[in-house]
Each structure stands twice: as C-alpha cells, then as structure tokens.
Image (tube, chains in turn yellow, orange):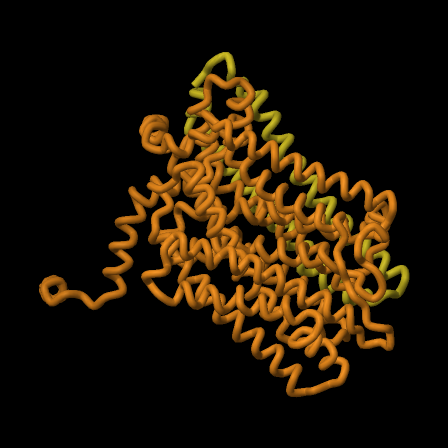
Length: 89
Length: 459
C-alpha cells in the first residue's frame, strides 16, 4: 500500500512512539501526583494511612493500564515485523 | 483481516464508510449549530468567571445546583459504554457486536463533559491547580478525581483497542487522502490481521473487559460517597453506592438507545441495528427501571420509618413540598412510563423503546436534582432554609454541555466507523460456530451421539 500519501516506516514508527511516550508521561504524571499527596500527608501528619490505602489501589491500577497498552502496542508492532509484512505498507 | 478481506468489506460495509467518505451537508450544518450552542455555553462561562458564582443561582445554603446535577448525570450516562459493552463482551452476548462501539464512545465523550461541570461549579477555577499540589486524600472529592481519571484512562484504552483493526481498514480505504491516511497509518499500529496480532488484541480486549467493570462500578460508588459521607439529611445512607450505580446503568442504557435510534436514522444503519437489538436493550431498561424503583422505595421508606426531624424536613419537601413536582415527575418518568411501555412485547418497538429512554433520561436528570438540591435547601445545621433558581447562565452552560456531547459524538463518527466492522465480520465467521458449539455444550447429548461415544469407549 505504498503511495505518495503514505509515510515511510521510520516516520510512522516515530509518531507511534510519540503517542506511547505521551501515555507514559500521563500515567507517570498521575503516579507522581498521588505520591506527592502521600508525602504531603506524611509531612502534615494528616491521615497518612488513608492516603496509603487509596494509593495502594490507584497506583497499581494506572500502571496496569499502562502495561496493557504496552502489551498491545509492542505485541502488534513486533508480530508485524516478525511476519515481514510490514514492508507492504 | 487481510487486504483481500478489506476489499470485500469496503463494498459490504459501504454505509459505515459514508459518514467518513461522503459526509452529508445537513449533518455538517447540524454540527455547526451544536458548536455555536457550545460557544454560547462558553460565553456564559466567561461571564460567570468574570462576575463569580453570583452570576449563577447558587447561594447559601444551596451551593450545588445544576452543575453538580449535570456532573452526576453525565458520569452516570458514561456507564452506558464501558460497563454495558464490557459485560456483554464477557457474557459473550452475540447481539452486542453492532452496539459496543456506540456505547464506548458515549463513555469517553461524556466523561470530559462531566468533569468540566465540576470546574463550572468552582468560584475560583484558577485555584483548581491547588488540588494537584495540596489535595488531601481523605476527602471523597479527591477519591472522585482519582477514580474518574482512572475510568477515563481505562475507557479510552477500551475504546481504542477494538478500533485498531477498523483503523487499518480505513488506512487501506483512504490511501488517497494524504493526512487522513497518515493519521490512520500511525494509529493502526501496522495492523495486518495476522493470527499473532489478533491473539494479542483479543487478550488486550479481554483483560480490559475484566478490569473496566470494577472501575466503572467504583466510579459511581465514589461519586455517591461525596453525598453519603456527609451527615446531611437524606444523603447519609449506606445504600447510596449501589443506588447510584443502578441509576447510572439505568440512564446509560437509555442514552445508548437514544443515540442508536438517532444514528440509525441519520446514517441509515437499519441493516446493522435491527429491532431485536432495541428489544433486548428495552428488556434491560425494564429490569433496571424495576431495580431503580426498588432502591428508591427502600431509601425513602427507611428514612420515613426513622422519622428523624431533619430527615423528615427534606422528605416532606420532596414528597409534598416545594420539590414535589420534580419528585413525582421523576417517579412517573423513571418508573411509570418505562414499565408501561416496556412490559408489553407489542409496545417494545423502536419507537416505544425510544420514548421510554427519553423519559428515563429526563427522569434520571430529575433524580439527580432531587437528591442534591432539597437536602442543601433544608440543611441539618440551624441555617435558614434556602431556595434555588438557576439563572440563564446555568441554563446556557447546561445546553452547551449537552450540545458539546452530541458534537463530540458526531465528530467521532466523521473519522471512525460507529459500528465495529471487524467484530461484525468475526461474528459471521467465528461467532456463529461458537454459539452453535456453546448451545450444544449446554444441552444433554442426543441418544445417537451418546451410543456412538459409548461404542468408541468399549472398543
């Protein structure tokens, strides 16, 4: 499916990685935010245990979502390269 | 999903490509009108920002009005998608195939608007940033922020994964459209439909279907905690979590039905969205209506039986007082209308189901309103009772919110097929055999099969 409108393999891969990195930044942004709130509650002695309790659910959940996205992203991309059909695009 | 099959799909599913390939002028004009109404809502917000919350009808003691009602309502509708889609996928309900995408788009579009309504309710929105710096995790408001963020992330991934094969179809279909083709090239992840890719995708979708259900349930439970964790009369209730989840699924199904009917009409999706789909969704709506009534009855009867003075002030204001018209209209819309229409097979037509759904949407909005405002107007602490009248600014923002939701939905349908093409194909190729096999496994074997198997064993 090569034509003038198509981008080359490298350029497509670059933008795909940009999307993936954006997702990484978002997820780790949320994780850092939660960690900051825990740190704050520790500093202010402000129900630290409660903050820890909620973050025990929230942080792994966000990381898990990132994991699923990663699995599908690399799973599809790598299996395409392995099957050698990537060049057809 | 190889290239040869893509060619087959192009003609067979021409109706689904039409909104992308040949967008109708009427729909473009309608989208323009929706955008204009949204801009009007934006103008109302700018005025509110400039003059403060005094421009709205919010005042002591009723500090939550239309905005929080809309917030709870929109987040409730978001259950249409992810939850219904995930449950139907997990249950392997084959009739889900043409409706899952429509449901999932509702979720993602509506969550942004629900979250925006929280911002509308802030007197000093520029200070929302402090939430990130100094938020306190023991506040249910912050639980809400976390759970909605998690739900939005999960729903976006859940919408995106089943889109990948369809984006690949579009990539091949629109090879002559420069930017559109490149956009699809990037987001299709080089999908070629090989068995390995299909396996990876199916695992991803299955995992997300499982994960998204508890997240969706937790989101509306946490929203109910905003109310039930306080000691306000008729809010401090242990059944608020399941009551809110039930209401959310109820309004979600109604929203899904309305969107299905509208899109079926404007995009001519009759071959995909058949009366059987509306019949099944109508039955689901009926079940949720009965469940909603059960929860409402339990909630009000328990409050009434306790006869606590502060509770009773709110109770009577709803049942016979200022808010009685809203309360009884809510009961009529949420229970009487849907039960009357949907209980009879003959009335469960597309038109009948649509009327019941519109009734439920109006009723559920009123339900959110009658939960929030009467309690604030009759507070537990010795404040004078208040009264709430929304101003034109609140009406403008509400109208803008609804318009923006429909606009986002139509915008999505301009770039992606609103019905999952590959899942329809999969249903034809694999689903039929799977269903036959499954039904066989439910039933006892016939005498012939049993005897031949016994013979095999003895030899």
